[in-house]
Image 1: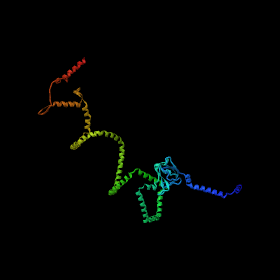
Image 2: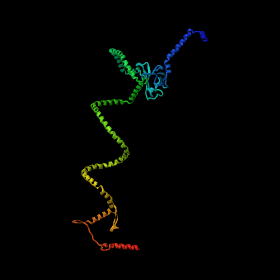
Image 3: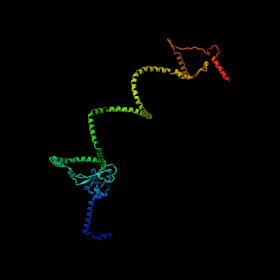
Image 4: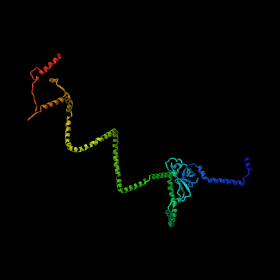
Length: 438
């Protein structure tokens, strides 16, 4: 009750006071409305980046729009003068838009109309997918080209031609062009609905990112094509030549395609048969690998031998031709020799390889009445000596042929009738006895 009484005791505002309050409120609202863009941009989340331009070119803080691929993504928040006289333009982007720019984006100031007057700042993604570090350098920024600058760069003849073109355009519009434009304006609404569907589809399933990624992909493709200047022209020329060849050989290609199913069937069968062969080859290749490695060294060593043997091999060709009749004649002989060798198998060959060879290779020692005779020479050597002596003894020839020589003689052993001892043996025994008595 005390508070109510206090309010009642207060004096009401005078009309002057009410007017002052209204003016202050209106001023505050006006300032707020005037700085609405700045207040909203400052309070909204986002990322701030800067770009270095040769000049600011009518960039207005909190009014100039920043776009990526024609889509607004932020506002210019400040324009500063750099030490070298260039302009540093700050801009605040919506959340997530900075990540789409890549590591080396570019920036350009674009006019909103052909005649200029109003501008916006266009950002173009570039570089790798990494984050942008630092400011966008002056080398990656671009100022707009105004129509008046283009006109100054044109030659007088080009300007005269442009004036004539404008006159022809007026004549075209007056000769039915206006009606055609009106017809276009009348029929255009009917196509805007389907066009809107097409444009909506172009946004993709993720409207926030799909179109931007598509533009980035097209930009990367165009950059790749521009970096390999001239290759695209070679590719197009090659495709033209290829299409010409395909056109001229169309009949052959059609014939090949008609026979392709049967060829594929045969190839499938062959590959299936080859599968088993490759499996066996794989099993064989493992153990054969060390041999092949050694064979490499052998072939390397054999190269000079083969080089020297090449003349001899060339001469052998004529020899082989001459030897062909001989080889043909040896074929029956080899067949009969095979029969002979087959007959040698068994006890006969075993006896020859056994006791016969042992006797021939053993030394000769006399037995019985010939005991004490012989020597260290093997039997085949003594047989050789005997044959040689017989050959020497039969060296005498006459008109009847070879005759064995016979030379009779007498010695101590020729005396007959002695009791089993010859004179030579008697003297040998006496000499031996005398040696023992000593």
